[in-house]
Image (cartoon, helix red, strand yellow):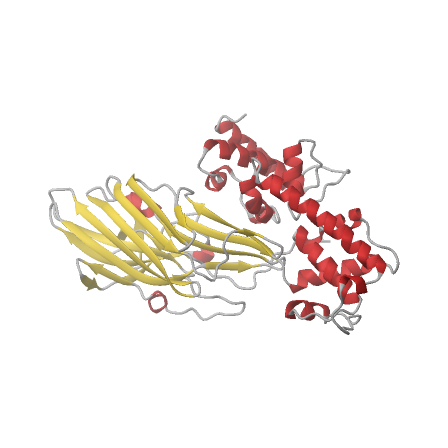
Length: 463
């Protein structure tokens, strides 16, 4: 039975990139409060994020500001960060590194570096959790009437990272653009360019892992060769932050060992496994369906005494006392029942590959990776109406398809058997789907999520 326990092995926070904003600083220097500025416009911004090492990055943000008033103005600029500012945190680690040293934050005004000070964010907001309050790097900038000034901020930070016991993982990176809406007028031209670290996996659907990328807003351009994501806006008033999420489910030696144990519990000398028994191996632990076939076949070779050249397989089977490798075996060297089981497994594998190809080429194919990961453990995700908007693809028809899948995915996760062929085939390729003739309905949380999706469908005119 799946252990639905979330354990973070390490955690960092990457909500560390933000547009300059105007702030009001308390006279005693205790902190600041963000504010609107009616006289100064952010005319343009260019943000370039470059990989420094692994998932550590260097950020350079260039801004052009103009005073549209006929008065001299003194503006207190603020650049917000969260208290967890991109260093790796481990359980039991209590020492807090110096924020300024950690970020290596620099502010340059018209070519000259200026002194900055660190101030707490005194805004009271239920949206900012107490354990992750914001602070600001703060400095003053004087504007003459009609003057244009150019600012540069540079600093270093890291991606969010999390893992759990079910081998789900996530890397996220956010640039807070909504603070740019505090300035007068709209941003005439904005370019945000983020390089994806080579260490992060690209979108894939494979035997060993399933990975997808979520871009917010989704209208970014992506160069798969350079793995650089670029957003370009004109006449822009930002209403949501820029973010990238690299999310996935990978299968490690722990998961493979569980499948080996299950195979061993089913294998009886002289009796081959049936195709239905092999299909039922797909469900435990959300393991990749074709990955299970690979483990099954190699388990039978291992039980027959096959010596593996591949290090990964040798390490896997050496966990078991029964593994006594003798020599490299060929198919004809295996017991007849093993041969028949492997032949049945290959038929099931061909069936699965054909099903995946049909779904990939169908109306829901582009959502395979996303739903395989998100609904492996949907309790991680917020399906409130405000959050749904950030999950949706930009095109209206794709939004219709995504919402239909999301609504039905909660039923699929609870074991519902679909009569609709397209839905049935789509969810049949999901590694976590286990159709149950005794479907007992949704729990309270799932029902609330479905109602939220239904309301959003009505809002968009899809119902």
